[in-house]
Image (cartoon, rainbow, N blue to C red; front, side):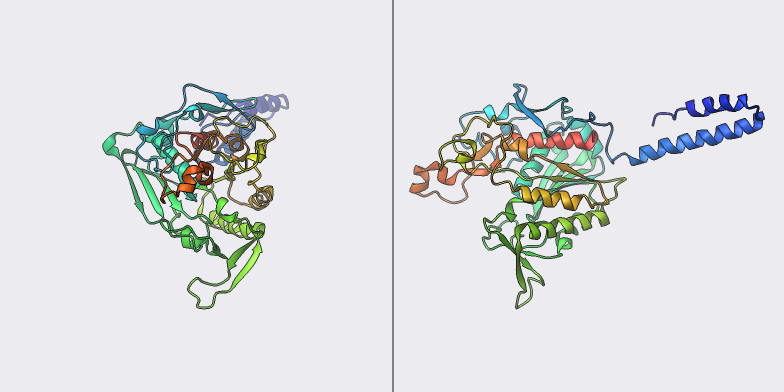
Length: 404
């Protein structure tokens, strides 16, 4: 901590000498003022968010900017990171171009601090960091592991999965980076990590602790929940009782209202279990899916398949990203006692129709001749190739973690 300024006591002492107070009284008043200044400095330090080592540039929104070509990227090669799931390894599965890997996010009026793997690992020494959410959040988790594992000796790291929890351990640092599968945050009928593809989705009201018990004692937590709520229907099924009940009490709520239940429960959990002086909470906004080519002015019927350039309209907003959901998040977070850092990746990611896995991934089911004849029919426009845009998401997280 920088030593507190003594200008206030000295200038005040000079003023008091003019009115001829005794030296002993002057000393006492000077000491009192010095303690007040020291207390004020300590208070300001105490208000600093956990993990922060500096401040971001004032009046600069790092989520508003443009993509610029940067041949120094990517930070790592796909083949050098053994932790990338086969549904994200686009090069291995035949993607012929690499252009999507060479773009850097440049905010208007300022720059992001360069990602520093050593600083990140040292800050995580003896700590736990956890991503909680769906497969998109898992992609960001893997991205961070790929950004960090390069500077860890081969025998100093491990990755293990047990049910819903995947843990990457940096042994020398006694640190873990974890991912916990909970696509709704609340308990649901889609909670089985390996068999979760359920069309008729049901979420249990007020059930945050079912998963939250696994999140306790984390130092940094990164939440994401959105895609699984978007069923194409206007209403969502909410279970009032228990999944064990023989007769289930299910009501249907507007999607925004159902989503708000999850946000309120998350907020309640954070207020109870996260200490603002020691821990940090992040929330990742909606990840866009480029499923409708008409959105960006191309003929209807297409999607992200064969897209190798980005959208250059700065006002573009993906139609699958519901602004009403953004409003729910804003309203709920405004009532939080614990600081929640909102990472607004939606707009900047909306430009990147070129960065999805598309057809270049492991296919878990055998494709039909009809699908093979029409690649658009099975293109994945939800998930993102690694290395790629989710490395940028982690750069933004890094920036807000250390320079909020």
